[in-house]
Length: 224
Picture (cartoon, rainbow, N blue to C red):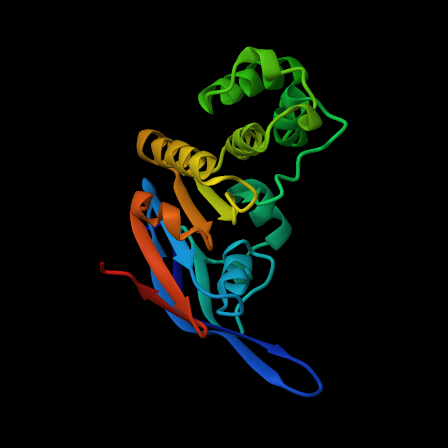
């Protein structure tokens, strides 16, 4: 069974003056052990689709199913907290917390004892190819690529199999971008994560398992 599936999902933004159909009847599946890219121009519906997958909203029609259960039937706060890990373009690290404390944070929210969280956080930092020397540094002391690796380690600390990434390489140079995507790919294939990457970076698409093109609210799998 897929970890996530969409069934005829539609979503529109409404205002006093217009109706904008952002997502138009999308059906697709996302499997564990696979890295997916969603690419498309600004305004094509990518961010809306990611928001629906993340449980920030529910479809107007159709269903987003997590392990076969419609998200509209779930407590969305609990769904996001327990099942979704997010990685952002601007990293969203806590500036006044060290690397170790940033990665410990989601574990402590889930009631893991500080001593255990500290040990596991250090292991997650090592798993993204960062040395122990960075553990007590603050985000401002790191390069962009290092900060993104810390953000990935923090996502892993959520201990969910579904990771959503919104332009994760947008602030990085091309070499660092490919290194970050290669790291995500290794984690996908070694540990069985499902990772969905929303990106404008066409230079990393050859590293994806599956690429979807988003055009005017419609999702099309790239067969090339």
